[in-house]
Length: 597
Ligand code: GTP
Image (cartoon, rainbow, N blue to C red; front, side, top):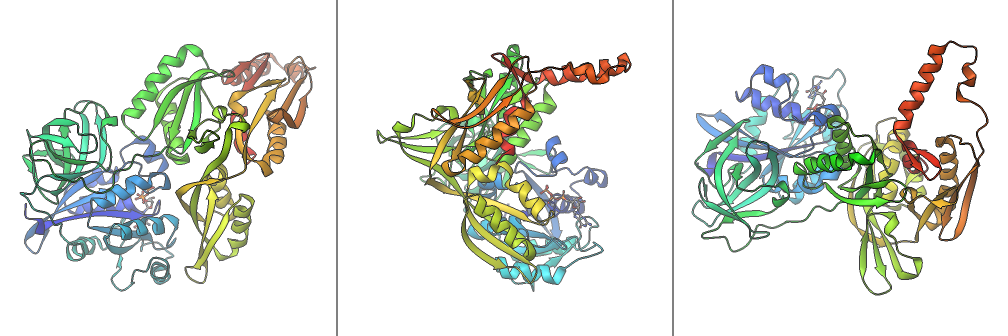
Protein backbone atom coordinates (compact mmCIF):
# COMPACT_ATOMS: atom_id res chain seq x y z
CA UNK A 1 0.00 0.00 0.00
CA UNK A 2 1.36 3.42 -0.99
CA UNK A 3 1.76 5.41 2.23
CA UNK A 4 0.46 8.44 0.34
CA UNK A 5 -3.04 7.03 0.87
CA UNK A 6 -2.69 6.19 4.55
CA UNK A 7 -3.64 8.43 7.47
CA UNK A 8 -3.32 7.47 11.12
CA UNK A 9 -5.21 9.48 13.67
CA UNK A 10 -6.79 9.50 17.12
CA UNK A 11 -9.74 11.32 18.56
CA UNK A 12 -8.89 13.00 21.84
CA UNK A 13 -11.60 14.45 24.01
CA UNK A 14 -12.89 14.97 27.48
CA UNK A 15 -15.27 12.26 28.72
CA UNK A 16 -18.71 12.46 27.12
CA UNK A 17 -17.79 15.01 24.49
CA UNK A 18 -18.81 12.45 21.86
CA UNK A 19 -15.72 10.51 20.87
CA UNK A 20 -17.45 7.14 20.47
CA UNK A 21 -20.36 8.69 18.61
CA UNK A 22 -18.02 10.41 16.16
CA UNK A 23 -15.98 7.24 15.67
CA UNK A 24 -19.16 5.32 14.92
CA UNK A 25 -20.34 8.01 12.56
CA UNK A 26 -17.06 7.79 10.60
CA UNK A 27 -17.53 4.03 10.34
CA UNK A 28 -21.13 4.43 9.29
CA UNK A 29 -20.44 6.95 6.54
CA UNK A 30 -17.62 4.86 5.13
CA UNK A 31 -19.89 1.80 5.04
CA UNK A 32 -17.87 -0.18 7.56
CA UNK A 33 -20.90 -0.62 9.79
CA UNK A 34 -24.66 -0.54 9.29
CA UNK A 35 -27.17 1.85 10.79
CA UNK A 36 -28.21 -0.82 13.28
CA UNK A 37 -24.64 -1.41 14.38
CA UNK A 38 -24.16 2.33 14.68
CA UNK A 39 -26.85 2.42 17.29
CA UNK A 40 -25.09 -0.24 19.28
CA UNK A 41 -21.93 1.84 19.70
CA UNK A 42 -19.50 -0.74 18.51
CA UNK A 43 -16.23 0.73 19.61
CA UNK A 44 -17.11 0.51 23.30
CA UNK A 45 -17.86 -3.16 23.58
CA UNK A 46 -17.07 -3.94 27.16
CA UNK A 47 -20.12 -3.90 29.40
CA UNK A 48 -18.45 -1.83 32.03
CA UNK A 49 -17.53 0.75 29.47
CA UNK A 50 -21.09 1.03 28.32
CA UNK A 51 -22.29 1.40 31.82
CA UNK A 52 -19.78 4.00 32.78
CA UNK A 53 -19.59 5.59 29.39
CA UNK A 54 -15.82 5.60 29.43
CA UNK A 55 -13.52 4.20 26.82
CA UNK A 56 -11.16 2.13 28.88
CA UNK A 57 -8.95 0.24 26.47
CA UNK A 58 -7.37 1.64 23.36
CA UNK A 59 -8.53 0.05 20.14
CA UNK A 60 -8.03 0.54 16.45
CA UNK A 61 -10.15 0.44 13.35
CA UNK A 62 -9.33 0.75 9.67
CA UNK A 63 -11.73 2.81 7.55
CA UNK A 64 -11.68 2.91 3.76
CA UNK A 65 -12.81 6.22 2.36
CA UNK A 66 -12.92 7.33 -1.26
CA UNK A 67 -11.85 10.91 -1.89
CA UNK A 68 -11.40 12.41 -5.37
CA UNK A 69 -11.39 8.94 -6.90
CA UNK A 70 -8.72 7.50 -4.60
CA UNK A 71 -9.33 5.01 -1.81
CA UNK A 72 -7.70 6.09 1.42
CA UNK A 73 -6.91 3.85 4.35
CA UNK A 74 -7.71 5.80 7.49
CA UNK A 75 -6.69 4.18 10.75
CA UNK A 76 -8.50 5.45 13.78
CA UNK A 77 -6.72 4.60 16.98
CA UNK A 78 -8.96 4.99 19.98
CA UNK A 79 -7.45 6.36 23.17
CA UNK A 80 -8.72 5.94 26.71
CA UNK A 81 -9.95 9.33 27.87
CA UNK A 82 -9.18 9.15 31.54
CA UNK A 83 -6.35 10.23 33.81
CA UNK A 84 -5.47 6.75 35.02
CA UNK A 85 -4.51 5.70 31.53
CA UNK A 86 -2.02 8.41 30.60
CA UNK A 87 0.61 5.98 29.47
CA UNK A 88 -1.80 4.13 27.18
CA UNK A 89 -2.90 7.45 25.75
CA UNK A 90 0.65 8.46 24.96
CA UNK A 91 1.37 5.08 23.28
CA UNK A 92 -1.76 5.32 21.17
CA UNK A 93 -0.79 8.82 20.10
CA UNK A 94 2.71 7.63 19.22
CA UNK A 95 1.06 5.39 16.60
CA UNK A 96 -0.52 8.39 14.84
CA UNK A 97 0.44 11.40 12.75
CA UNK A 98 -2.61 13.42 13.69
CA UNK A 99 -5.44 13.87 16.15
CA UNK A 100 -8.93 15.27 16.18
CA UNK A 101 -9.42 17.37 19.29
CA UNK A 102 -13.13 16.97 19.94
CA UNK A 103 -14.83 19.53 22.13
CA UNK A 104 -18.44 19.79 23.29
CA UNK A 105 -20.06 22.93 21.86
CA UNK A 106 -21.65 23.75 25.18
CA UNK A 107 -19.29 22.41 27.82
CA UNK A 108 -16.21 23.75 26.11
CA UNK A 109 -12.62 22.95 27.03
CA UNK A 110 -12.38 20.64 30.06
CA UNK A 111 -9.48 19.21 32.04
CA UNK A 112 -9.01 16.14 29.89
CA UNK A 113 -9.35 18.15 26.68
CA UNK A 114 -6.30 20.11 27.80
CA UNK A 115 -4.35 17.09 29.06
CA UNK A 116 -5.00 15.07 25.91
CA UNK A 117 -4.35 18.01 23.59
CA UNK A 118 -0.98 18.58 25.28
CA UNK A 119 -0.18 14.89 24.95
CA UNK A 120 -0.92 15.15 21.21
CA UNK A 121 1.22 18.28 20.90
CA UNK A 122 4.07 16.53 22.71
CA UNK A 123 3.76 13.60 20.31
CA UNK A 124 4.21 16.12 17.48
CA UNK A 125 0.83 15.41 15.91
CA UNK A 126 -1.12 17.64 13.55
CA UNK A 127 -4.24 18.60 15.44
CA UNK A 128 -7.64 19.38 13.96
CA UNK A 129 -10.09 21.08 16.30
CA UNK A 130 -13.60 19.70 16.01
CA UNK A 131 -16.48 21.30 17.89
CA UNK A 132 -19.16 18.66 18.40
CA UNK A 133 -22.84 18.76 19.35
CA UNK A 134 -23.62 21.88 17.34
CA UNK A 135 -27.20 20.59 17.23
CA UNK A 136 -27.68 21.30 20.94
CA UNK A 137 -30.31 23.97 21.66
CA UNK A 138 -27.72 26.06 23.49
CA UNK A 139 -24.14 26.21 22.24
CA UNK A 140 -21.18 28.51 22.85
CA UNK A 141 -19.21 27.72 19.70
CA UNK A 142 -17.32 31.01 19.38
CA UNK A 143 -16.38 31.10 23.05
CA UNK A 144 -15.33 27.46 22.94
CA UNK A 145 -13.00 28.23 20.04
CA UNK A 146 -11.55 31.13 22.01
CA UNK A 147 -10.94 28.81 24.92
CA UNK A 148 -9.11 26.40 22.63
CA UNK A 149 -6.93 29.23 21.41
CA UNK A 150 -6.20 30.68 24.85
CA UNK A 151 -5.40 27.54 26.76
CA UNK A 152 -4.18 25.13 24.09
CA UNK A 153 -2.92 27.59 21.49
CA UNK A 154 -4.74 26.22 18.45
CA UNK A 155 -6.14 28.81 16.02
CA UNK A 156 -9.93 28.86 15.58
CA UNK A 157 -10.06 29.49 11.81
CA UNK A 158 -9.68 25.91 10.65
CA UNK A 159 -11.88 24.34 13.29
CA UNK A 160 -14.70 22.09 12.16
CA UNK A 161 -18.22 22.20 13.49
CA UNK A 162 -20.11 18.94 13.60
CA UNK A 163 -22.90 16.96 15.15
CA UNK A 164 -21.73 13.40 15.56
CA UNK A 165 -25.15 12.36 16.70
CA UNK A 166 -27.01 13.77 13.73
CA UNK A 167 -24.28 13.17 11.20
CA UNK A 168 -23.71 16.85 10.37
CA UNK A 169 -20.31 17.85 8.94
CA UNK A 170 -18.84 14.34 8.96
CA UNK A 171 -17.58 14.40 5.37
CA UNK A 172 -15.66 17.58 6.26
CA UNK A 173 -13.97 15.58 9.01
CA UNK A 174 -12.81 12.99 6.45
CA UNK A 175 -11.58 15.72 4.11
CA UNK A 176 -9.72 17.51 6.89
CA UNK A 177 -8.03 14.26 7.96
CA UNK A 178 -6.84 13.64 4.39
CA UNK A 179 -5.77 17.24 3.86
CA UNK A 180 -4.20 18.20 7.19
CA UNK A 181 -2.76 15.02 8.63
CA UNK A 182 0.50 14.02 6.97
CA UNK A 183 0.81 10.53 5.48
CA UNK A 184 3.18 8.25 7.37
CA UNK A 185 6.85 8.03 6.44
CA UNK A 186 8.92 4.81 6.47
CA UNK A 187 10.55 2.50 3.96
CA UNK A 188 8.98 -0.84 3.03
CA UNK A 189 12.32 -2.64 2.74
CA UNK A 190 13.94 -1.35 5.94
CA UNK A 191 14.30 -3.75 8.90
CA UNK A 192 10.91 -4.08 10.56
CA UNK A 193 10.01 -1.79 13.44
CA UNK A 194 6.42 -1.85 14.64
CA UNK A 195 5.05 -0.20 17.79
CA UNK A 196 2.86 -2.27 20.12
CA UNK A 197 0.09 0.05 21.30
CA UNK A 198 -2.41 -2.38 22.76
CA UNK A 199 -3.20 -6.04 23.22
CA UNK A 200 -6.16 -8.14 24.15
CA UNK A 201 -6.93 -11.69 25.02
CA UNK A 202 -9.23 -13.66 22.75
CA UNK A 203 -10.58 -16.97 24.00
CA UNK A 204 -10.12 -18.64 20.62
CA UNK A 205 -6.96 -17.11 19.23
CA UNK A 206 -5.04 -16.25 22.37
CA UNK A 207 -3.19 -12.97 22.63
CA UNK A 208 -3.82 -10.40 19.91
CA UNK A 209 -1.18 -7.73 19.59
CA UNK A 210 -2.11 -4.33 18.12
CA UNK A 211 0.68 -2.79 16.12
CA UNK A 212 1.53 0.20 14.00
CA UNK A 213 4.28 -0.52 11.48
CA UNK A 214 6.80 2.31 11.40
CA UNK A 215 9.28 0.80 8.95
CA UNK A 216 9.66 -2.44 7.03
CA UNK A 217 7.05 -5.05 6.23
CA UNK A 218 5.61 -7.87 8.28
CA UNK A 219 4.36 -11.02 6.53
CA UNK A 220 2.26 -13.85 7.82
CA UNK A 221 4.44 -16.87 8.69
CA UNK A 222 7.51 -14.86 9.73
CA UNK A 223 9.13 -15.07 13.15
CA UNK A 224 9.04 -11.85 15.13
CA UNK A 225 11.10 -10.66 18.03
CA UNK A 226 9.92 -8.38 20.83
CA UNK A 227 12.79 -5.98 21.40
CA UNK A 228 12.06 -5.33 25.08
CA UNK A 229 12.90 -8.84 26.26
CA UNK A 230 14.15 -10.52 23.10
CA UNK A 231 11.38 -13.13 23.09
CA UNK A 232 10.46 -14.65 19.72
CA UNK A 233 7.17 -15.77 18.31
CA UNK A 234 5.80 -17.23 15.08
CA UNK A 235 3.24 -15.07 13.27
CA UNK A 236 0.13 -17.14 12.59
CA UNK A 237 -1.94 -14.30 11.20
CA UNK A 238 -1.72 -10.58 10.42
CA UNK A 239 -4.68 -8.39 9.62
CA UNK A 240 -6.66 -5.25 10.20
CA UNK A 241 -9.75 -4.29 12.19
CA UNK A 242 -12.46 -3.30 9.70
CA UNK A 243 -13.89 -3.20 12.42
CA UNK A 244 -14.08 -7.00 12.51
CA UNK A 245 -10.72 -8.76 12.23
CA UNK A 246 -9.86 -9.25 8.55
CA UNK A 247 -6.66 -11.13 7.81
CA UNK A 248 -4.20 -10.10 5.09
CA UNK A 249 -0.81 -11.23 3.83
CA UNK A 250 1.30 -8.40 5.12
CA UNK A 251 1.39 -5.03 6.84
CA UNK A 252 3.68 -2.36 5.45
CA UNK A 253 4.97 1.04 6.65
CA UNK A 254 2.28 3.24 8.19
CA UNK A 255 -0.26 0.45 8.43
CA UNK A 256 -2.10 -0.40 11.60
CA UNK A 257 -3.36 -3.88 12.41
CA UNK A 258 -2.93 -6.96 14.51
CA UNK A 259 -0.72 -9.99 14.95
CA UNK A 260 -1.87 -13.38 16.17
CA UNK A 261 1.18 -15.32 17.27
CA UNK A 262 2.14 -18.02 19.70
CA UNK A 263 2.16 -15.64 22.69
CA UNK A 264 0.13 -17.25 25.47
CA UNK A 265 -0.35 -14.63 28.14
CA UNK A 266 -1.17 -10.99 27.90
CA UNK A 267 1.48 -10.22 30.48
CA UNK A 268 4.11 -11.13 27.85
CA UNK A 269 3.02 -8.27 25.60
CA UNK A 270 4.08 -4.82 26.68
CA UNK A 271 2.43 -1.69 25.39
CA UNK A 272 5.20 0.52 24.01
CA UNK A 273 7.40 -2.42 22.96
CA UNK A 274 8.88 -2.69 19.46
CA UNK A 275 8.31 -5.69 17.21
CA UNK A 276 11.03 -6.60 14.72
CA UNK A 277 11.90 -9.71 12.69
CA UNK A 278 13.97 -12.48 14.25
CA UNK A 279 15.93 -12.63 10.99
CA UNK A 280 17.29 -9.24 10.02
CA UNK A 281 16.25 -7.43 13.23
CA UNK A 282 16.26 -3.64 13.56
CA UNK A 283 19.18 -2.24 15.53
CA UNK A 284 17.31 0.11 17.81
CA UNK A 285 13.88 -0.10 19.37
CA UNK A 286 11.39 2.72 18.91
CA UNK A 287 11.47 5.22 21.75
CA UNK A 288 9.39 4.88 24.84
CA UNK A 289 8.73 1.66 26.60
CA UNK A 290 7.76 2.15 30.23
CA UNK A 291 6.33 -0.34 32.65
CA UNK A 292 2.96 0.80 33.94
CA UNK A 293 3.30 1.72 37.60
CA UNK A 294 0.51 0.72 39.94
CA UNK A 295 -0.14 3.70 42.18
CA UNK A 296 -3.20 2.60 44.11
CA UNK A 297 -3.51 -0.61 46.14
CA UNK A 298 -6.18 -2.30 48.17
CA UNK A 299 -6.74 -5.66 49.80
CA UNK A 300 -9.51 -7.99 48.66
CA UNK A 301 -10.57 -10.80 50.98
CA UNK A 302 -13.23 -13.47 50.57
CA UNK A 303 -15.66 -13.42 53.47
CA UNK A 304 -15.83 -17.16 53.30
CA UNK A 305 -12.27 -18.52 53.49
CA UNK A 306 -13.18 -21.42 51.18
CA UNK A 307 -13.67 -18.92 48.35
CA UNK A 308 -9.97 -18.06 48.30
CA UNK A 309 -9.10 -20.22 45.27
CA UNK A 310 -12.18 -19.03 43.44
CA UNK A 311 -11.16 -15.43 44.02
CA UNK A 312 -7.66 -16.20 42.78
CA UNK A 313 -9.13 -17.62 39.56
CA UNK A 314 -11.33 -14.59 39.06
CA UNK A 315 -8.46 -12.16 39.61
CA UNK A 316 -6.30 -14.18 37.26
CA UNK A 317 -8.98 -14.00 34.59
CA UNK A 318 -9.20 -10.25 34.95
CA UNK A 319 -5.45 -9.86 34.72
CA UNK A 320 -5.49 -11.82 31.46
CA UNK A 321 -7.20 -8.91 29.84
CA UNK A 322 -5.53 -6.11 31.69
CA UNK A 323 -1.80 -6.30 32.09
CA UNK A 324 -1.72 -3.15 34.21
CA UNK A 325 -3.71 -4.77 37.01
CA UNK A 326 -1.67 -6.81 39.50
CA UNK A 327 -2.52 -9.05 42.42
CA UNK A 328 -0.51 -11.00 44.96
CA UNK A 329 -1.60 -13.16 47.88
CA UNK A 330 -1.33 -11.61 51.33
CA UNK A 331 -2.68 -12.42 54.72
CA UNK A 332 -4.14 -10.21 57.38
CA UNK A 333 -4.70 -10.97 61.05
CA UNK A 334 -8.10 -9.42 60.78
CA UNK A 335 -9.25 -10.74 57.43
CA UNK A 336 -7.40 -13.98 56.86
CA UNK A 337 -6.09 -14.87 53.41
CA UNK A 338 -6.72 -12.57 50.48
CA UNK A 339 -4.97 -10.55 47.80
CA UNK A 340 -3.24 -7.22 47.53
CA UNK A 341 -4.37 -5.69 44.25
CA UNK A 342 -2.58 -2.91 42.37
CA UNK A 343 -4.21 -0.39 40.05
CA UNK A 344 -3.09 2.54 37.93
CA UNK A 345 -5.48 4.83 39.78
CA UNK A 346 -8.86 5.05 41.48
CA UNK A 347 -10.91 4.78 38.34
CA UNK A 348 -9.01 1.71 37.27
CA UNK A 349 -9.73 0.22 40.67
CA UNK A 350 -13.44 0.93 40.42
CA UNK A 351 -13.61 -0.64 36.98
CA UNK A 352 -11.94 -3.84 38.17
CA UNK A 353 -14.16 -4.03 41.24
CA UNK A 354 -17.21 -3.60 39.13
CA UNK A 355 -16.13 -6.38 36.81
CA UNK A 356 -15.45 -8.65 39.74
CA UNK A 357 -18.86 -8.01 41.17
CA UNK A 358 -20.63 -8.49 37.88
CA UNK A 359 -18.87 -11.66 36.92
CA UNK A 360 -18.67 -13.59 40.13
CA UNK A 361 -20.61 -14.33 43.20
CA UNK A 362 -17.92 -14.22 45.82
CA UNK A 363 -18.64 -12.02 48.80
CA UNK A 364 -15.68 -9.78 49.33
CA UNK A 365 -14.31 -7.52 51.96
CA UNK A 366 -12.29 -4.83 50.45
CA UNK A 367 -9.94 -2.58 52.39
CA UNK A 368 -9.58 1.14 51.92
CA UNK A 369 -7.19 1.94 49.07
CA UNK A 370 -3.80 3.47 49.66
CA UNK A 371 -1.20 4.90 47.31
CA UNK A 372 2.35 3.66 46.83
CA UNK A 373 4.96 5.23 49.14
CA UNK A 374 8.72 5.24 48.89
CA UNK A 375 10.95 4.85 51.91
CA UNK A 376 14.61 5.66 52.28
CA UNK A 377 15.80 3.39 55.06
CA UNK A 378 18.61 4.16 57.48
CA UNK A 379 20.61 1.36 55.84
CA UNK A 380 20.59 3.38 52.62
CA UNK A 381 18.12 1.20 50.73
CA UNK A 382 14.90 2.41 49.20
CA UNK A 383 11.70 0.44 49.51
CA UNK A 384 8.30 0.83 47.88
CA UNK A 385 5.36 0.37 50.22
CA UNK A 386 2.02 -0.75 48.88
CA UNK A 387 0.47 -1.70 52.19
CA UNK A 388 0.53 0.40 55.39
CA UNK A 389 1.12 -2.84 57.29
CA UNK A 390 4.58 -3.12 55.75
CA UNK A 391 5.90 0.18 57.10
CA UNK A 392 8.91 -0.65 59.28
CA UNK A 393 9.54 0.88 62.72
CA UNK A 394 10.07 4.62 62.70
CA UNK A 395 13.71 4.08 63.76
CA UNK A 396 14.52 2.37 60.46
CA UNK A 397 13.12 5.15 58.29
CA UNK A 398 15.30 8.00 57.19
CA UNK A 399 12.86 9.53 54.69
CA UNK A 400 9.18 8.84 54.11
CA UNK A 401 8.20 9.88 50.57
CA UNK A 402 4.79 10.20 48.97
CA UNK A 403 3.76 10.45 45.29
CA UNK A 404 3.00 13.97 44.07
CA UNK A 405 0.60 14.72 41.25
CA UNK A 406 0.50 17.83 39.15
CA UNK A 407 -3.21 18.49 39.11
CA UNK A 408 -5.09 20.82 36.78
CA UNK A 409 -8.63 21.94 37.52
CA UNK A 410 -10.93 23.74 35.14
CA UNK A 411 -13.63 25.49 37.12
CA UNK A 412 -16.12 28.34 36.86
CA UNK A 413 -14.55 31.60 38.05
CA UNK A 414 -16.85 31.85 41.06
CA UNK A 415 -15.53 28.54 42.44
CA UNK A 416 -11.83 29.39 42.32
CA UNK A 417 -11.74 30.30 46.02
CA UNK A 418 -13.40 27.07 47.10
CA UNK A 419 -11.04 24.93 45.05
CA UNK A 420 -8.01 26.77 46.36
CA UNK A 421 -9.21 26.16 49.91
CA UNK A 422 -9.80 22.50 49.09
CA UNK A 423 -6.25 22.17 47.79
CA UNK A 424 -4.75 24.09 50.68
CA UNK A 425 -6.50 21.75 53.12
CA UNK A 426 -4.90 18.86 51.28
CA UNK A 427 -1.35 20.19 51.48
CA UNK A 428 -1.41 21.41 47.90
CA UNK A 429 1.27 23.71 46.50
CA UNK A 430 -0.16 26.42 44.28
CA UNK A 431 1.34 26.67 40.79
CA UNK A 432 -0.77 28.83 38.49
CA UNK A 433 -4.12 30.25 37.42
CA UNK A 434 -5.03 30.97 33.84
CA UNK A 435 -8.34 32.26 32.54
CA UNK A 436 -9.90 30.44 29.59
CA UNK A 437 -12.34 33.24 28.99
CA UNK A 438 -14.32 35.60 31.17
CA UNK A 439 -16.07 32.79 33.04
CA UNK A 440 -13.73 29.89 33.58
CA UNK A 441 -10.20 29.32 34.75
CA UNK A 442 -7.57 26.61 34.92
CA UNK A 443 -5.88 26.26 38.29
CA UNK A 444 -2.81 24.10 38.71
CA UNK A 445 -1.61 22.62 42.00
CA UNK A 446 0.89 20.03 43.10
CA UNK A 447 -0.96 17.72 45.44
CA UNK A 448 -0.04 14.52 47.26
CA UNK A 449 -1.67 11.68 45.33
CA UNK A 450 -2.89 10.20 48.60
CA UNK A 451 -4.95 13.33 49.17
CA UNK A 452 -6.46 13.19 45.70
CA UNK A 453 -7.43 9.58 45.43
CA UNK A 454 -9.92 9.46 48.24
CA UNK A 455 -12.48 12.05 47.46
CA UNK A 456 -11.02 14.94 45.47
CA UNK A 457 -13.15 14.23 42.47
CA UNK A 458 -16.37 14.12 44.47
CA UNK A 459 -15.45 17.26 46.37
CA UNK A 460 -14.68 19.07 43.15
CA UNK A 461 -17.99 18.04 41.63
CA UNK A 462 -19.99 19.16 44.63
CA UNK A 463 -18.06 22.42 45.02
CA UNK A 464 -18.70 23.34 41.39
CA UNK A 465 -22.17 21.81 41.01
CA UNK A 466 -20.73 19.36 38.51
CA UNK A 467 -19.07 21.96 36.28
CA UNK A 468 -15.49 21.49 37.47
CA UNK A 469 -13.16 18.92 35.91
CA UNK A 470 -9.69 17.75 36.85
CA UNK A 471 -6.75 15.82 35.49
CA UNK A 472 -3.56 14.75 37.20
CA UNK A 473 -0.18 13.38 36.35
CA UNK A 474 2.30 11.85 38.78
CA UNK A 475 5.51 13.85 38.75
CA UNK A 476 7.52 11.97 41.35
CA UNK A 477 8.01 11.23 45.04
CA UNK A 478 8.64 13.87 47.69
CA UNK A 479 9.69 13.65 51.31
CA UNK A 480 6.93 14.28 53.78
CA UNK A 481 6.24 13.94 57.50
CA UNK A 482 4.15 10.78 57.30
CA UNK A 483 3.29 8.26 59.98
CA UNK A 484 1.46 4.98 60.17
CA UNK A 485 -1.73 5.18 62.17
CA UNK A 486 -3.02 1.96 63.76
CA UNK A 487 -6.57 1.23 64.77
CA UNK A 488 -7.23 -0.93 67.80
CA UNK A 489 -10.53 -2.63 68.43
CA UNK A 490 -10.91 -3.87 71.98
CA UNK A 491 -7.19 -3.47 72.51
CA UNK A 492 -6.14 -5.41 69.39
CA UNK A 493 -4.63 -3.86 66.25
CA UNK A 494 -6.77 -4.42 63.16
CA UNK A 495 -4.11 -4.48 60.47
CA UNK A 496 -6.59 -3.92 57.63
CA UNK A 497 -7.59 -0.56 59.14
CA UNK A 498 -4.06 0.85 59.39
CA UNK A 499 -3.42 3.94 57.26
CA UNK A 500 -0.59 6.27 56.43
CA UNK A 501 -1.30 9.90 57.29
CA UNK A 502 0.49 13.20 57.53
CA UNK A 503 1.57 13.82 61.12
CA UNK A 504 -0.24 17.14 61.30
CA UNK A 505 -3.47 15.45 60.27
CA UNK A 506 -3.15 12.32 62.38
CA UNK A 507 -5.14 13.43 65.40
CA UNK A 508 -8.02 14.85 63.45
CA UNK A 509 -8.28 11.81 61.23
CA UNK A 510 -7.82 9.43 64.12
CA UNK A 511 -10.65 11.09 66.01
CA UNK A 512 -13.08 11.08 63.16
CA UNK A 513 -12.16 7.54 62.16
CA UNK A 514 -12.90 6.05 65.58
CA UNK A 515 -16.13 8.06 65.69
CA UNK A 516 -17.06 6.67 62.33
CA UNK A 517 -16.21 3.11 63.39
CA UNK A 518 -18.41 3.52 66.41
CA UNK A 519 -21.30 4.11 64.06
CA UNK A 520 -20.46 1.23 61.74
CA UNK A 521 -19.86 -1.50 64.30
CA UNK A 522 -23.01 -2.67 66.01
CA UNK A 523 -23.17 -3.09 69.74
CA UNK A 524 -22.08 -6.36 71.24
CA UNK A 525 -22.77 -7.95 74.61
CA UNK A 526 -19.73 -6.17 76.00
CA UNK A 527 -18.08 -2.78 75.84
CA UNK A 528 -15.69 -2.18 72.95
CA UNK A 529 -12.87 0.36 73.02
CA UNK A 530 -11.99 1.87 69.62
CA UNK A 531 -8.61 3.57 69.51
CA UNK A 532 -6.31 5.25 67.02
CA UNK A 533 -2.59 5.10 67.79
CA UNK A 534 0.77 6.12 66.41
CA UNK A 535 3.27 3.59 67.63
CA UNK A 536 2.44 3.10 71.33
CA UNK A 537 0.73 6.51 71.70
CA UNK A 538 -3.06 6.52 71.61
CA UNK A 539 -4.28 9.68 69.87
CA UNK A 540 -8.04 9.11 69.88
CA UNK A 541 -10.55 6.91 71.64
CA UNK A 542 -14.25 6.10 71.56
CA UNK A 543 -16.18 3.54 73.52
CA UNK A 544 -18.99 1.47 72.12
CA UNK A 545 -21.21 0.59 75.06
CA UNK A 546 -22.59 -2.89 75.61
CA UNK A 547 -25.83 -4.00 74.03
CA UNK A 548 -28.91 -3.97 76.17
CA UNK A 549 -31.93 -4.17 73.96
CA UNK A 550 -33.21 -6.87 71.69
CA UNK A 551 -33.15 -5.68 68.07
CA UNK A 552 -36.68 -6.79 67.42
CA UNK A 553 -37.93 -5.03 70.48
CA UNK A 554 -38.89 -2.00 68.47
CA UNK A 555 -41.25 -4.18 66.51
CA UNK A 556 -42.99 -5.34 69.62
CA UNK A 557 -46.63 -5.93 69.18
CA UNK A 558 -46.05 -5.86 65.44
CA UNK A 559 -46.75 -8.81 63.26
CA UNK A 560 -44.32 -11.64 62.77
CA UNK A 561 -43.68 -10.88 59.07
CA UNK A 562 -42.18 -7.56 60.00
CA UNK A 563 -39.87 -9.26 62.44
CA UNK A 564 -38.93 -11.82 59.85
CA UNK A 565 -38.07 -9.08 57.42
CA UNK A 566 -35.85 -7.42 59.95
CA UNK A 567 -34.10 -10.69 60.72
CA UNK A 568 -33.62 -11.39 57.03
CA UNK A 569 -32.14 -7.94 56.55
CA UNK A 570 -29.75 -8.56 59.39
CA UNK A 571 -28.72 -11.86 57.89
CA UNK A 572 -28.00 -10.13 54.60
CA UNK A 573 -25.88 -7.59 56.45
CA UNK A 574 -23.99 -10.37 58.22
CA UNK A 575 -22.76 -11.78 54.96
CA UNK A 576 -20.44 -8.84 54.63
CA UNK A 577 -19.10 -9.03 58.15
CA UNK A 578 -15.91 -10.40 59.44
CA UNK A 579 -15.55 -11.88 62.86
CA UNK A 580 -12.52 -10.33 64.46
CA UNK A 581 -11.70 -11.83 67.82
CA UNK A 582 -14.93 -11.33 69.68
CA UNK A 583 -16.02 -8.39 67.56
CA UNK A 584 -17.89 -8.43 64.27
CA UNK A 585 -16.74 -5.74 61.88
CA UNK A 586 -18.86 -4.98 58.80
CA UNK A 587 -17.41 -4.36 55.34
CA UNK A 588 -18.37 -0.71 55.48
CA UNK A 589 -16.10 -0.17 58.45
CA UNK A 590 -13.06 -1.11 56.36
CA UNK A 591 -13.94 1.63 53.93
CA UNK A 592 -14.81 4.22 56.55
CA UNK A 593 -11.18 5.29 56.41
CA UNK A 594 -12.18 6.93 53.15
CA UNK A 595 -14.90 9.05 54.59
CA UNK A 596 -12.76 10.87 57.07
CA UNK A 597 -10.25 12.33 54.65
P1 GTP B 1 -16.43 8.46 26.74
O1 GTP B 1 -16.44 7.13 26.05
O2 GTP B 1 -17.06 8.44 28.09
O3 GTP B 1 -15.14 9.19 26.69
O4 GTP B 1 -17.48 9.34 25.99
P2 GTP B 1 -17.40 9.73 24.52
O5 GTP B 1 -16.57 10.95 24.40
O6 GTP B 1 -17.10 8.56 23.69
O7 GTP B 1 -18.88 10.20 24.32
P3 GTP B 1 -20.08 9.45 23.62
O8 GTP B 1 -19.84 9.29 22.17
O9 GTP B 1 -20.44 8.25 24.41
O10 GTP B 1 -21.18 10.58 23.79
C1 GTP B 1 -21.54 11.09 25.05
C2 GTP B 1 -22.98 11.56 25.00
O11 GTP B 1 -23.10 12.68 24.12
C3 GTP B 1 -23.93 10.51 24.46
O12 GTP B 1 -25.13 10.59 25.18
C4 GTP B 1 -24.14 10.91 23.03
O13 GTP B 1 -25.38 10.50 22.51
C5 GTP B 1 -24.05 12.42 23.11
N1 GTP B 1 -23.60 13.03 21.85
C6 GTP B 1 -22.53 12.69 21.11
N2 GTP B 1 -22.45 13.46 20.01
C7 GTP B 1 -23.50 14.31 20.06
C8 GTP B 1 -23.97 15.35 19.21
O14 GTP B 1 -23.41 15.66 18.17
N3 GTP B 1 -25.09 16.01 19.61
C9 GTP B 1 -25.75 15.71 20.76
N4 GTP B 1 -26.83 16.42 21.05
N5 GTP B 1 -25.33 14.74 21.57
C10 GTP B 1 -24.23 14.04 21.24
